[in-house]
Length: 317
View 1 (cartoon, helix red, strand yellow):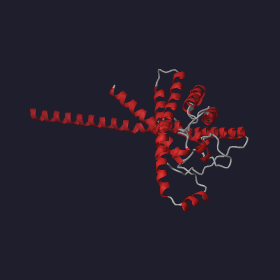
View 2 (view 1 turned 45 degrees about the horizontal axis):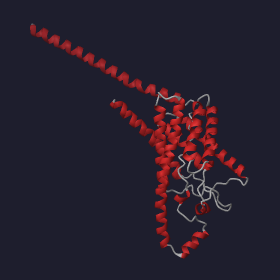
View 3 (view 1 turned 90 degrees about the vertical axis):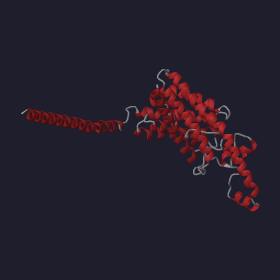
View 4 (view 1 turned 180 degrees about the vertical axis):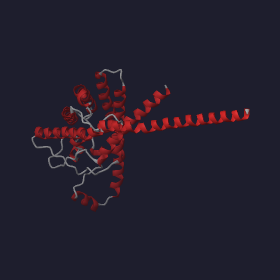
């Protein structure tokens, strides 16, 4: 009789355990199913355009226009400081309106860090290139002779120029991400930090440029020794430039929009050291595939590298 009761108790306990397991399983399934719903809702909200979109576009046009003008008119040696100071002022002026990207690469970098909606990126890029083109038009009007730029070198690719632009842009974007993450800084402090980040990026890229040019010149001299007189004549007939392309750049731009307006040096400028070329020489824009890819990759690399470093620092704290 005792054995029978014990068996009944064991069966009841087993049944209770089964019910508890089933209930727990149901609860788990409910949690898993409910998660995607929140994600889907967030994605729908992300596609909405802000009500001040027109203000953002106008602010980016003005900011890029001013930055491009300063880059075009500033002296070569002091350019990093002038451009950096200009960015400080622009961040203070339009930072609360558009964030003062005034650089397609910065826009891409912030997007890669998930700090910018995908739907907004094309508007930023369009505004930035419009601002740069406006600076080109103004420069042409001031010069009196018009200002024509040629895209013959757009498809050209130099690994040396690519490396200079990429490293400089990564340094710049790393600085932007670091300054933006500081909650203890006032708006003025953040503006100065972002401007100095650009200055630092330009200085780093500028320090690498002579090494790239030196390597290109050495390679050019070696090729010159092996060239025949006929090849020299064919070269002149094709109106190719005399020196390697790396020698025609005056430094890094770290900005595809500014690169559109900035031109490479000409043969007469290299030979005479003058800042102005002759009328019959072409002015090739600095905007090329290497500049576009290098700045975009550099911005994504620098911004996300900071996120990685700051995340590891927080997790170890």
